[in-house]
Image (cartoon, rainbow, N blue to C red; front, side, top):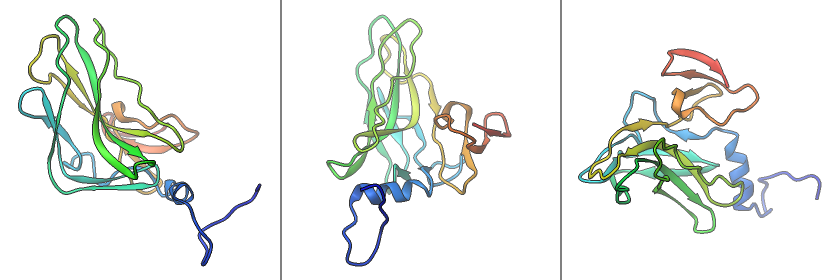
Amino acid sequence: MAQNSWPFENIDTTETEYSQLFRNFGAGVVGVPTGTQLGTSAGTGLAVNVQAGQAMVRGHYYFNTAVESLGLATANPTNPRIDTVVLRLDPTANSIVLAVVTGTPASSPVAPTLTQTDAGIFEFALANVRVNAAATTPSTITDVRSFIGSRVGIWNTAGRPTPTTGAFGYNTTTGSPEVY
């Protein structure tokens, strides 16, 4: 079918169709960059804590009312790595959960590539966590949250959205508006 429209009374609407509809209302954390919503901090040992909060991921809503502790993989004995804390949408499991994508140890580590498929697993980044060689605690936590809002986005330099044609927003790192 070349044309489709939804939702209408007495017509079945799929999860994918609702997801496509709500993607147009924005994606990101519900809150502001200076707030704690889904913010990440060092936990006990080699773990991070993610604060309570809400987010929209690919048209699906996530809601958490408590601090969640996420364990990180054991540090490499020789090289540091960067892990990414994500909200992982799995439409097959009908869930969004907090997770850690473990990076690859290297002398100059980079954040791991996230899985971001249209109708399958989609990982939404909240923070990058540096795990130094032989570390027993996380080293540096970089906030990469982007925030839901009106048609004007709010992000920091590390958490810029995927480049699009003319996404307008306010960069909290530079303190200025930008088109990305």
